[in-house]
Length: 567
Image (cartoon, rainbow, N blue to C red; front, side, top):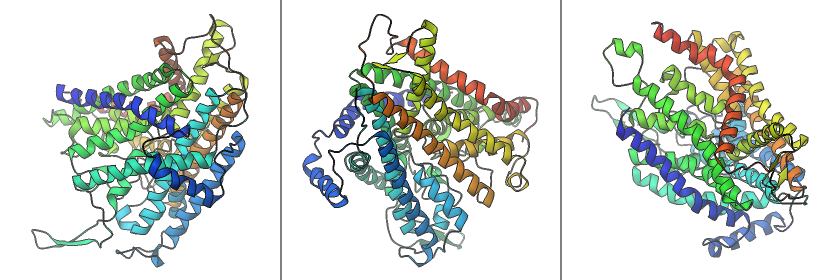
């Protein structure tokens, strides 16, 4: 580890914190329907969308109606992606002549992109046409990200409102998020990426002659526009198979740093939106502090593990750290930081191969996802996931002092706690349940490239990434099989929607309650004690749930490595 490395990490964190408040202010105005500097241009377009689609923007929805609208919206998204992939061979903008995508892979990919997971059992440049990349994937990157933000705002309204039956209008929230937030930022972002050397073209693949005289086909396409939303919307789906380690997706150190910033920016800003909407910005800063503590610990462990290398590398005289699977242009610190960021958020883009990390360095991204990706998390999803843990922490605090727990003026009662536990427990059911099947089912075992604990970690990582709607792969696992296409799709679906529905039920329940002014017995939720309590609850739940599986994978692999055995 070096001082320059730590300076990069500190600079990254400082910029994220600096952006949180101004962007939170802007987002709050957007979701409250207030005028912004973009309103003169975008307000007529917004009104036209409502007129064309028959939406009354002033009519709000009950939490159940809001949720049903969201689910129907995603049915449409699924059909679009599945349809264009199956019809790819006869559709335009297909310069490489890609054929129809197989049924099971199309199904897996469609589920992947509507759940904001972007798990890819294919190589983008060798499987998909430009039209599918744009109409199917990039299009859904916007809408799945907008959905996550809309759901987080609906849950915030549950905490901030009193004695009401509505939590907003799904169609209005998605429209405003897309129109006022995602699109404007991505237009500027795309131009920046093009300036860094990322292609943005509908032209044919380029034929080149190498120095040896051989012919090489270089894939290009509308890359920059997809990279912009895949990072900002924490989608992670790469235009190229190598994702953010490909020079056409991430060509420079500056593009790498800006991409890391864009992964966290909106998720961090939503904590400030929470504080503003509940009338106390310190509440939002407290939640961001919880995220920051967990994030800082993860970065420290991963950077230490990768900079330290392994005993095998030391035996070969290589003491500069573990550079296996990393881009030389990014190095250890930028690769370690990117790995923690992309798994703390539900992004899934990678600029290094996690399969090549040390056992402990690869364990941190795994833990980030197993905790529910609440450390900033996916846009919107991270905040509503964190608020579920806050509900549990407040409940524990209430048990300690023997009174009904309260949070931002709302009593946390049995209904809210049950819904929070339901949402949290459904995740390990998918992580661990499908992993248990995957390590004994013959065709699934055949997909594992490594034996022993490393092979076990490959399978555990895959189902954790899918359920957590992350989409990054540990690599080393052949995922494009009927078994993995179907089981990973089920994990992605359950991980997204079986968490959303209980969270929305909590939003509706809280919105209907009266607000209670703080009293002498109210537990303070803006200080260090609250931050420590929430961190403790998260780690205890994670430790009790996942330690046995981690012990079978990365922990025992680390111990074996120290004993001279590698896998």
